Image 1 (tube, one colour):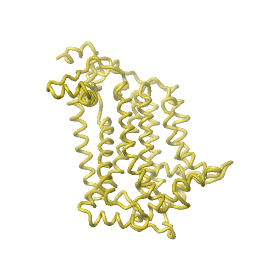
Image 2 (tube, one colour):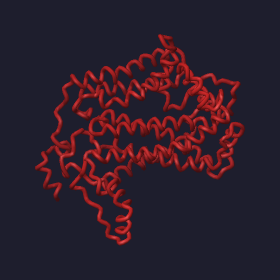
Image 3 (tube, one colour):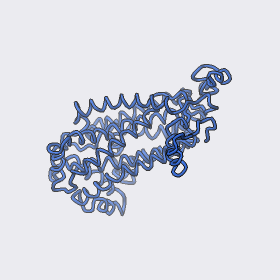
Length: 426
């Protein structure tokens, strides 16, 4: 989508003109985050979280590079090298705590970003590719986080790797071969640690590349907005800079304050105490759990306890991966012509039921694999799949949406477009 009313980049400095003619990088930046990119004038603070996700990716890459300079990817000294970083490297403790808690904050802002997209219908045409690329980023994040959790080589690191890679054994015929190929052996050891370290270092840069595609796909149709109404003209937009750079700057300030509180006062709150014990293949922890941001999917995995045609373990693996892959089909499961949940009364109710359901799954995933948590996770898993496969398609065809504004300007000012034109022109 082109914006003919957008301000075009016209460098005045001779060097910038020369540069822009030969390598139009200044023009690209200007059109991406400057006055050359018109944005709907009614975006709320939930639209800040995409920028915040990019911020934490940068934090993770920078701190990860520094940590990699001192980390030893060898099973005999990996745990000691982490303790060396914490105790002997100048500001090493800070780098590690920023990196560890940065992963948690990265997932927090991404989860909010995803649920904002679910509520406001950001997956609907013409932004399907933006949604699909976002899910690819999410999958890459999960893989990166899992491999990063293994690197400290503590008890939970080792046994987490043992449990997660052991899931592949549920695949008939080739499962054991896949597991041994991933680990480089029969169990997590030096070969697995080297592979995980290499991929953990590489994947953030792959994520950065997919983010560029994600932003590119977003800039073709333009940003969505809380009303779900298409941009009608210049009266519906404002330049990204300075309006949304200032708004994003405020969001960055708030999240960095919260992040600093976590790093300096609660650095181990989201971690597990057993990971400060060196990995011991002969001592199994009483309660093996992944990091908190995997808990909903872990609960779905453990919800299957009975063999039915196929082994329960295989059903759990299929359901866990299916819970994410299901989101790739969301643009075609929700047929409602109305994008925003703000104007869909039934959708809004079921959306909040889904939010509560995911929180319950997270609670069950972090709890021991015993009753009543197993039964609750089974019920919550059933609802999760029913929401997308049954409830959402039905309400998208049967609900009666509320009246929508004719334009973004009308939604903001309560006036029609013609009345807003003089104000926009002035």
